[in-house]
Length: 425
Ligand code: ATP
Ligand code: MG
Figure 1 (cartoon, rainbow, N blue to C red):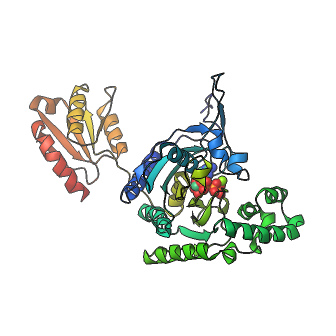
Figure 2 (cartoon, helix red, strand yellow; figure 1 turned 90 degrees about the vertical axis):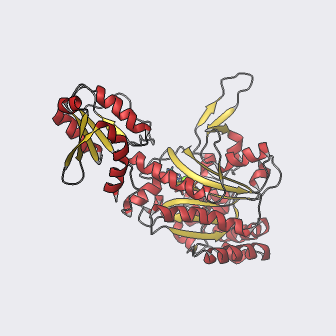
Figure 3 (cartoon, rainbow, N blue to C red; figure 1 turned 120 degrees about the vertical axis):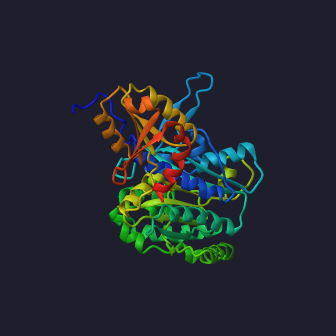
């Protein structure tokens, strides 16, 4: 096949059936899970003022390197916009703008955009689902948020995803730890990668997030932030851990876990799929960000949330061999009388809730039967000249041993739903 003139842009991909069916199945599971927790969906703009994301902090790569820029054409208001790289900042912006009643519990799904070096499981446009709980400092809010993500992974059938848990403490804790970490990194500066030497000057904590080989040994021996937690932060962290244990949610303490963004405080967590490549094995993550709403011009408001990468969750499902049930078509109509019967009958059956497909272009019986087999339908309804004259149809079981029965056309709407239930049992 010769290459077509246009390809999907670098780092993007067309998701098509059957993968789209798996994506929809995951989105449905997510929606179900979050609705069961009293979270409502929020749909916010795909682009925002660049300032919304700049509040995330200047040492985060999302802000410094990964944003796609857009410029408003209005010469009087030449606003600098960006395609959203994540949704927590947009949601805090929406909170500051609308001041809803707290606790405000929302979930979202949609594409995010980051100018990254594309690799398997790392794209420039990718799909995320996530949730945020704003306006509560209660450690049980942390537990609920983590349980939502964890129950979602459980429902997908993934058995190996691991929850990594850490606490970054409050401002006081962070200050004390930053001093200790800076001292440590200064002593080891010559052995750090060039990028980490730079990051160190902006935000030493972010050095711990480096995935570069050269930095690993130094990160391994760095002081633990959990040794610096003050009483308040420590108590919060203990209650979160007790809560998770009460719910039977397993976790591993991960004292090096700092995650990508600067604004996290206290609880921080990540879900990893051990079957994926280490550079791309994070399927989701989140944490508490008690200062972000205020930084965006809202009232001081605590917040906690998570985001899950759907593309990577699918890769994890493939790696673990778990499959989402895909809804196949139920009935395929084979009409050799010109197609008019297929037109009317497919519409009639779709209206009573059945899923029905058909062929076009008056193709041969053989070609239509082949299409019926390929469709994955359970039953074929065959209408030839004989059936048309007798006001009957022939039903053929496509899954079993190809049993055929002749039925009155009028009885179809009544009999089919029962028959389909029988065959799926
Ligand atoms: P990573 O360390 O892998 O770059 P991150 O810390 O940048 O991840 P978050 O900002 O926490 O990721 O986003 C939450 C989830 O979104 C990630 O755990 C991952 O599953 C997914 N994700 C992030 N970036 C990408 C990407 N470029 N392509 C596909 N999925 C992504
Ligand atoms: Mg990243």
